[in-house]
Length: 247
Image (cartoon, rainbow, N blue to C red; front, side):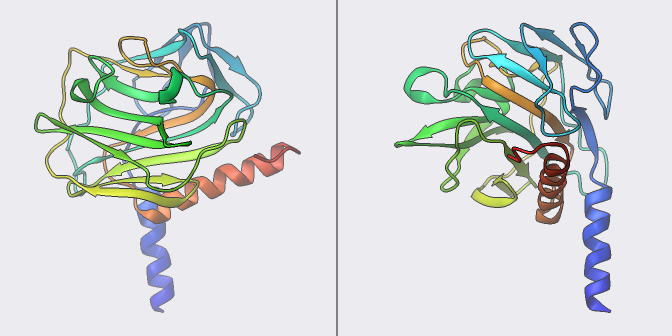
């Protein structure tokens, strides 16, 4: 009986996480990227639709120079039970690490510049010694903190699934369903209606992504481990069914 109850609780946590924005790039029309969760349609500048995506076929390809998707203003509203933080998730496949020695192309970012104190929230990669790992920035109550994964080395030309979560007490990073970093942090996620969010670049357009990005989502609460692992498993399943090259 206990296992049934635990399974039901895990399923509930997966199904009832509040998705506020999501882009799977399947229904791109011209330069418009429809938001599958809310009303945050994006506008493409330079990036092109690729048929090599992780889910269903489509992804966006970024040139590592000046491509991006402008998502408009997105803020995280605490408007429901348990909504104390946020989650960002995305599939990505880099074909080169950009920006010299930094390797810090942006997957998604809301900021007024690419520096730490100018960032509201961000998911990117970053050089860590001779390796490249995930990085998560988050501003609460005027202070931006940065979490760099302490494990989980990234590979070029390979699909990875990343999730960054914040629950009001801890920032966490997950790579391919595994926890790769965490740090203590408190406060409510900062909002600002003057600055838009971007996929594939920083707000000042100096941290471009090179490669594919797919199925980007933002949630108004911290996803539990069960949800992160479910999302990863679903992506792997779809990839195995649709592709012979797997990841």
